[in-house]
Length: 162
Image (cartoon, rainbow, N blue to C red; front, side, top):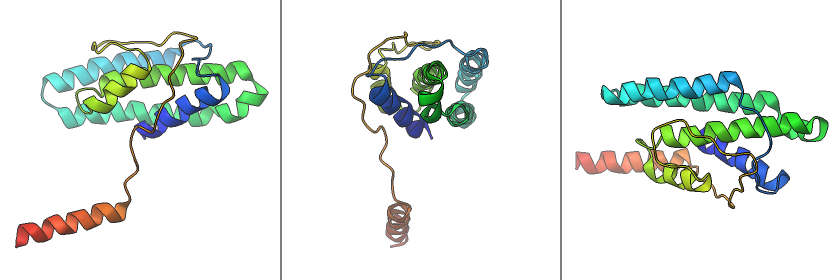
């Protein structure tokens, strides 16, 4: 879900906005969700409740994907360009903060996204400027076929039993 959000948002910007973060205004609800995530996830991590912290982050990931889907930038690109720009601007802001929030859990991929968006590694809300130029991005995570996972689990199970 996280990799999909990043890929579809940033590739859309590459393709239709010449790699530049489009004009937009941070949605108040999104701003509130980001702010809350830092407080809640930070408190969970400090208490050693890593799974609960990760669950909170993925609530934000799901909300970001729902936002992208509900705003339909693939349609508004031709019917209401300012709405399209605003959607993508907000998606970039969510991606930026998800990269920071996920850094304790997936540091290597988080670092890659932080570099793409020119973010610091500081645990605080961070935003990408309008017009910021994005590099050519790449797929962050390769999809793993379920059969490969099942085969590996079976192999490990057999090695444990023998």
